Image 1: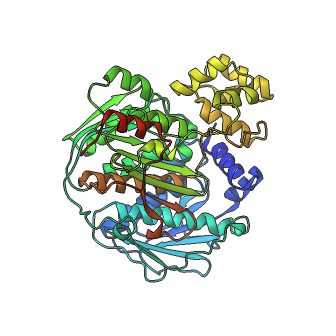
Image 2: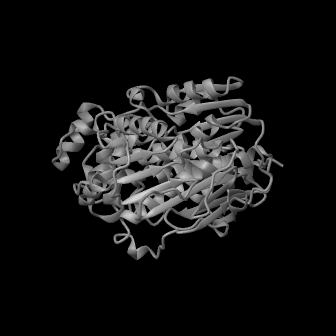
Image 3: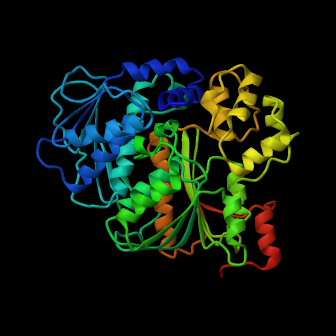
Length: 488
């Protein structure tokens, strides 16, 4: 399944109409940078913006001092998802449906213009947006995601009309204020012992920021994911390249982090999270877990390992978010946010069996392991629904279910926990939020559990940040209370 197919699937999930995919192919976008050399934050913004746009829009012209760099980045992004690249070029050939100006108002044409800038922790949209000298990648990445979301909103405004959304003509965001993170500074970062469960779309957003963190990064990071890359991942995996196809995700990310931070110990584990934890043993608890997973069920599996602290990142429809969990003393653990629905008449396995006809024991095995379907298993799923099996070979079952749903072949139950299919800018937003939560956690912030969420087309607000408290029916919190487990 190519990135183009995945984007059609995401449009189907968002609007109920995969036919809107044709609008992606007919839209012309221009990205303009000043003719003079860009400051460091502008270069970072230009790079991330080209990557996130290139994974969705096939017709983009680049102009200005960063045009060649942006073209190279966008072409790599498109190729990673087997998407066409003929419409990507360095030129100025108006008219355009949407123009993005980075750090300057020098757009030599009239039309719809998004001016975007960033510096350090500050993000700007509007006629006053400029870029500064800071080499902090967080502000530029957030600005790129915000601008990319506004491009999408402009091109699908009529379809998004029922969401009570207005265009962000002018917007200023202080990310320290947004995430209640006055303590954050750019400097050496020690991530201690960290275990990353799931090296998927949101994790790739976090990885790019960690890779570009301008100071030394030390500690130990364990990458846990059993999957290899496929071209469908190019739809939303930040800075994935075509040469990554068929490579283990953990191996490719390890090479990137090794090159960027030689004093960071990076361990790769191409296995599922349950196998990893069983092999590691449970005598010493996980000091820090990062959950970059694609289902509530998988997050519950992480929570059941009782990590001392957890950073969680997620996308769900038009909302994204991240949280930091430091359980104990009434503070929530990860499981508190993903309690099982006791009112569901049958469990997840039963629902999928009813919809697909796959044997329950095989369903449980596929869900628990997260491994890709064999050709025989793909034929079983496809034959039950009258579709071709080849597109499902090597795909985890959770990825196959929404694909069947998007083609109209499968009506998922209302309580289903199938994987969401976000756009690249949504995954990037979530990865940035997760990275900020990681920074806060590494500052030894002991202020309990907290989370932040955002509607991807609305202005970010610090009011969406809140403390998270334990749920009385959470089995993990109950287990910790009974055993006297506490960090304090």
